[in-house]
Image (cartoon, rainbow over the protein chains, first blue to last red):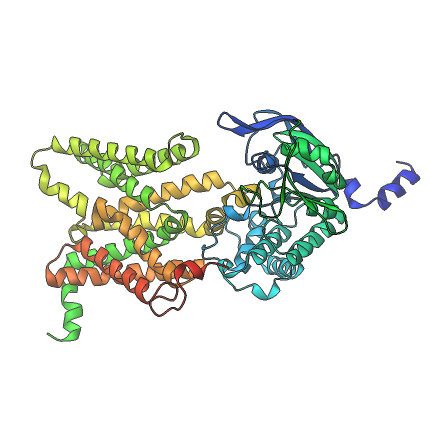
Length: 289
Length: 286
């Protein structure tokens, strides 16, 4: 190696020192039973990415995360995660399930939930030590939940629960965050706080891949966006989310358009919370499709 | 009769000593496993496996093999079969389990009916007879129970993670599928050692009731398990004394004491009881 190249390598941020992309999909199809959820998806995610995966319900967003996490084996195509097959580097991955997938009446405290992030690296028969407790405390502080360590998770608000689960992911010290709707159903303050944490992780060279129904958050707080509707419709910088044509293609012309105060336009994916458009909102259908 | 005599008199009998040791052991093992059974919603599976154990016991009886071996093979095989069905099945899970367990139980009854004078012994299997336990059986219960408890102790934090959040646990690299099969196999062993105490029909109560009572009282996993164990042990001793003095069926007496604790916790506990101001639906809401 020349002196110049050595200097360049030393100066480069952590992200570029990792060999190759964090996640690479090559013509991947996957599904459940005989029902396809992803068809012929090719996608590359570089280290340090802050990627929003958007698309309507049933578009395969969660499936994409599950394939990356090694929880679902693809039907065809090649998946490379952190340089190997999915699941091979599981301890470098933190996965945050959808809020609906969690039994909130489960008798565990906030501290116990966050400590679970340390379990895989501890191994069978090993109890958490001072290093683990310190990491748990730090992670809870990062999400502003340090005072809640002894509370039962069911006693928390929806936003606090998401904070605690993000703390569990942070406690695992992963290189890759897979977050299934981390900001769904939380208040604006929580959303800002959680995105601040994720942004700083991405700056530190970690890769963040999150599904979301919040298109405004995707456009404003993420760096990249992937448009999914069983097939990958598009990928690129996050401000593409405001592209009406791409949205129509991704959501099948099924998005809500609200007139903004300053003549601006807010777009909302209406597939998630309600079947009918709320009063006062205009339903946008692209009949040309 | 004085109070001391009330407590010590029954202990003069060898069958009471063995019965108390056996049912306390069984109660402890069941409560530890029951914590996972309650939190994972495996009560129906527990009931199914205990019924499916029956043909194993009968075949062991017919060929003169140790009953625990026959029962354990049937129980573990059924547990694992249920595990496979749950992962690959196309029918609704409880439907598959219902078919499986009624079919295997019927097979056991048919086999049993080929034995002469089968009726009296059948009741022993179905309803349990812990006071008839032999010293040899007691040793087997102790060994198998210790194996179950030691295994759970070693993998308890992984079991907790996998029970609470299977997807998150699997994604972090824990062998969740293996843990699930292991839990089902342990459940099978637990059920077999419990059948002598309370019989096939009431095993599910030993598995579920003390842990469910504990869940009504506390919100911490470790504490829930500890309270379940204590309740199970108290119920076992109290049930056998009641059975001794009132000449009632032993297994059913234990289960009734456990049920009494459950009703008391439901009526008076902090989450659901009349003394709590919040309704259960609100207790976990935001």
